[in-house]
Image 1 (cartoon, rainbow, N blue to C red):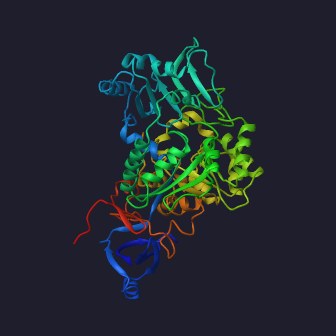
Image 2 (cartoon, rainbow, N blue to C red):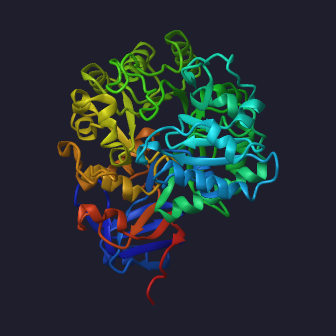
Length: 534
């Protein structure tokens, strides 16, 4: 028995503007599309119920191609610093939170961003110590490539003035060589390893909280990277499978496998796309560099606002190649965090040297700063670039100070990538950015800064159709599922995002304000904002 969907704007996303009157779904699969009359008569004996869209717009289910599901859930639970506009505001929020802590309990905050402050100076650990001398404190920067820690946290972690910088990380010190409490990239792990382990039921709760929110934003799935941070591969993978069991909860979670737990996956007899219909394993995740905010993204030329600094290579070239080769030994694709152009150059050269032969696809995550050589390599290689359109809204104009005007031509160059034939998928990198795919689509179309509201490099604006494709067929292509997901066609999964308004007809700057009416996974309504009119 199936469902007949009709009465709205049903865009197949096969071609721009192509819409159909009705869709018939059965057992989680689209069986047919066409006119309402034809489908009604063809499947008259099989239709269990009819769903009248009442003029709403149906799209293939939107999928975030790069986020951190557990991190997003924790942001919803923890102290959220992402909207604060000054260090003073952050300090007051920390003071308020400490009032409810027991002695020794960790204070964890998420998302501070000095680029939003009038005075963009980094808060010193001495300030944090005054707020909370007896509670260890760990505050993640919005990019998640830097943290602030107070002295108690550093004491528990054994970090002193004599602690050397780890490979791929920096313990920031002042002119006298004293630690400031600011730790970049792999140096963060020194603090995180001192934090208490999280409980299994906590992880399951966080995953449920996160997926509830994701579905309310119209997302039917997400490609996430969580398996190395919450007690190891088995614990975290098990939490996902229990939280998203396909019965009480449906959500299409595709989990990248951090290289440090790849062997755990292999030991369990698992590999690429193994798992269930709702929780499956993906490519091997590798970090190649840091982020632009902390000036640790790896560039070919020095930062415009910090001479002599070209960023940080998380791994030396020998170790990076070893990780790629280890993944290849098991026929696994890689998904590599690469923000700077030197990072892109380094990883694309290794992909070319060690190609896959089984059809799985490697992924370049972010790819924000390119050069002519890296663009040429991306065009030649069978790779997918996971882009985050919202980065344009949140990074401009301050990113110009980091990289200078001369590098802008191939920075955040989403339209150039698509025009050159490079396959792209769209995501948010939540909790770093807001998770709403409509915000991402709007950012891709308008390229308007959320800071000064100016449009940056309008020649790189995407059409609405191109932007929606990033979150539909683009996300499906990245995981070798473009023949079953991302379009409204017979044989594809019946995953839909249903909007109150027509995304192709509203003003581009209003896309973010469209309400999500329903989120549908396998033909089942898993989120409904407004009840259907009787």
